[in-house]
Length: 292
Image (cartoon, rainbow, N blue to C red; front, side, top):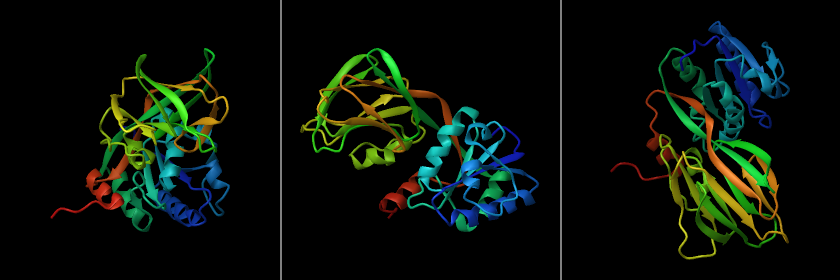
């Protein structure tokens, strides 16, 4: 975090009624430190009693030097994609269930955030995925994802068929429920449930994980993040298939659509309390055994 912090943006989970209490307490704390506070406009619409002005999501990234997200990992994913082009570092306050990314606990958030503002913190960069969908030689949709890009079947219990290419070279064809292209961040999300590998956040890598492949031999594959992964969707004319991005947006696919996924130019910078251990987080969240 190279910039001097003068203005902090506050973002919250809209559907959670407890968010208002925590965000208002956080606002008072930041104002007490003589910092300017801006609310995400969508967040402010659900909070009464705020003293600070609000800005639309489209413009707030250009006015703040730090973002604090109060909610769960899903809320942080949503905010991170929008702020990445502005290179705004993010602190996550956890009100969700798992909290892989939002690792500051709400009960003592002012203490931990105070330490971070005083320069006592760890920083890490997380790569983003850039996806393009090509149909009949034309790009019809683009999206950014922090966790994953998923090509999957529709509501019918039928498998879909697709081919995988790496930098234009054919890798394999699969019949199954779908395929996950995941970043290291997303390797502990849906890809983990599908039997994919856990990638350390510092790795510059992308993993491809089949979902319920109709074969006994197919396995996840890990590629360099400099690669371009291409998924050709085949023979789905009689059913639905779609691409989803971080599980928060979707696009319907047609026969012979091509989904291209590569590393995005922007990255997400996360700030954590000092002493945070990635493997300790894994032990706690995934209930791994502790050191004997």
